[in-house]
Length: 97
View 1 (tube, rainbow, N blue to C red):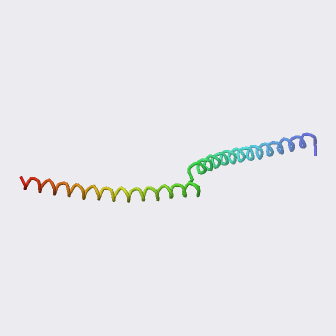
View 2 (view 1 turned 90 degrees about the horizontal axis):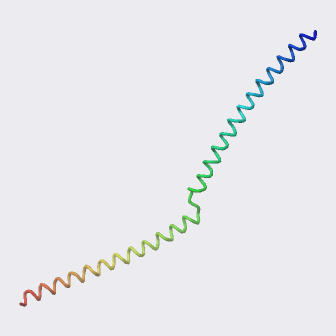
View 3 (view 1 turned 30 degrees about the vertical axis):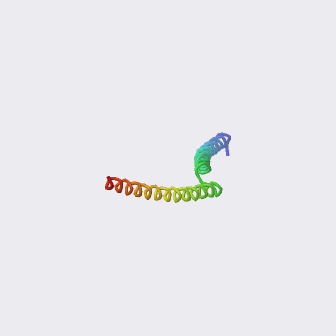
């Protein structure tokens, strides 16, 4: 093999190596970009996913709210009965006049 042929072979090999290196670089950049996207999505999940403790606190608050709602319902019923009694007494007074 002559010096010229050897040089041409080396240049050809270098060209192939550069091509492969560019492919690898592009692939690495794509993988890095995808990894950054996945990291961002994971971070969002960490902030938006309810943990077991949060769910337990919410359930406890809901239980308290349901108890309060029941108590308020009973109070409304009592007030409604008192209103009916007051109206009845008022009607009785009007008739007695």
